[in-house]
Image (cartoon, rainbow, N blue to C red):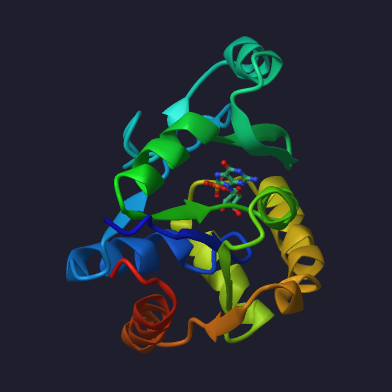
Length: 189
Ligand code: 5GP
């Protein structure tokens, strides 16, 4: 059995990574599994604990950090996010391609430890469209929206450190493009 490949999926907050990811999983032909991150951010309406994230307190997160359980971790705005290394390795060893949906600082840590990981960066068609998407989500205050947009400008500077950059203008086109990349780059598909 071939070992799966680690796929890093990044892009600014609001670019539509989760929607894209869910569409990719629905296709069912990419041998994909999702690595559920741990976070201290409050749960949003429509999210489910242990499905979208493992939602934990700051104490629990710091305990996991102390126990060295993270493949990578980062602070984003005011919250911690991290990828549990054992979960990722268990899935890779079962032959699955494992998708990490993480921000750029975490992606850098993963690439240092796992240089064979495939990096895909999703960009919005424009910043005004990105703002509309975050505002329409209606889950963040004006202050957090502005922080996320500032962060988006910072994150975009890292896009060329990824293997592929995909524009999420029309969802179905972006899904098709990412799907083709995974089929081409992941031997266990
Ligand atoms: P959100 O709060 O919108 O769910 O996520 C904020 C940012 O953190 C997004 O860019 C998301 O991809 C990223 N993120 C989610 N989980 C992780 C993780 O485990 N590690 C890192 N480094 N970033 C994460």
